[in-house]
Length: 427
Image 1 (cartoon, rainbow, N blue to C red):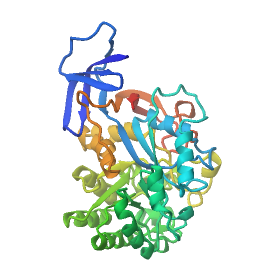
Image 2 (spheres, rainbow, N blue to C red; image 1 turned 30 degrees about the horizontal axis):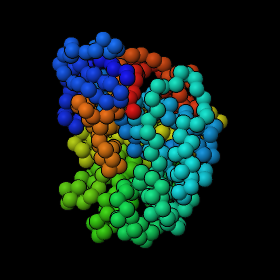
Image 3 (cartoon, helix red, strand yellow; image 1 turned 180 degrees about the vertical axis):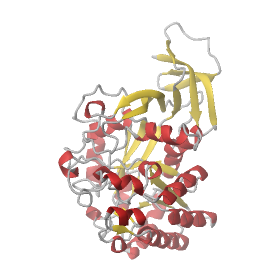
Image 4 (cartoon, rainbow, N blue to C red; image 1 turned 60 degrees about the vertical axis):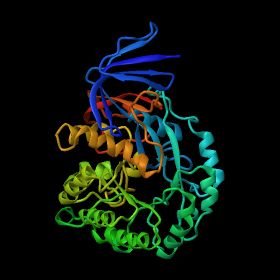
């Protein structure tokens, strides 16, 4: 049995609202002790000086995209899990938009079996891969027309149900909310009216006019959210609202929560860090769906996360090959990688600036996502399973292909030096 003593590490535990320096003993995958100072240890204990490091509960990603199956040149399951571990995540959830789509129990079983299969092993593999969670599709082939066999997918072990795409048929959504209720699994929707969105690629406003890019009106998101809220008010099934990106959406969700409706919500890490002004570079990794918000949207989203109106921060990692992204801004597929970048960038831009406390950020990346998935919440306390992330907030590194585990490099931070990197995870 391996026993480790992490000396004088900064412990961040959102469950107990703890942010303090302590000694932590971990043995055989379990937390043995947490105290201001621990001196009574066995002779074979490995002692690590962790001054300046942060030990937090393991990060949980609500939804991201895996290339495998179907697009292994973008990402394999192994490279996806390696990237997640390198980013501090101990649980990750893949969306069903693979090829074929994850719409049947056989594919769920195959992915569970192939977890950690063949893939690129360089740089050196993280010692502990995160737990893979799989979203089951709401509709066959995520086409938005015919419902999947929800009970069969639930029995196969999916974490919940979503298409990861807008479901335009509200009659189908209503039936889904009725059918899924007894299954006890979360159901997530990306609210977007594709007709209102039309060919837009950038949030409507002065910057879209200035940059000459087709606009996406706020109403493309808010009308869809309002429809979902009405259905939840009628049927009562809890839902999760994905990819919240506008200030008006925050208002609608806040009102619904104040009325006691069973709704949780998430935004993505890039929508908290960037706004429409960043699109001035026309970097195709800034083409996101939903698009980056205006400065007022960004401000409202940050405040909503602090207040808990928006419960969680998702990575929505979307890998693409170089060839797929080397196009005109409007023609490139939307999305960017983020599993290895989210924590250091959020820490530097939100916590180091004093806008967020360390507990607020960690809660939005760890405890709250687990609760949105109706899953067990990890805790840093004696006799609890060691599901932990050790993070060095002061370690500099450069975002280069050779320093990334993901097979793709579609990020606006490519070539830049960041501060902060994960040292280790325990799963």
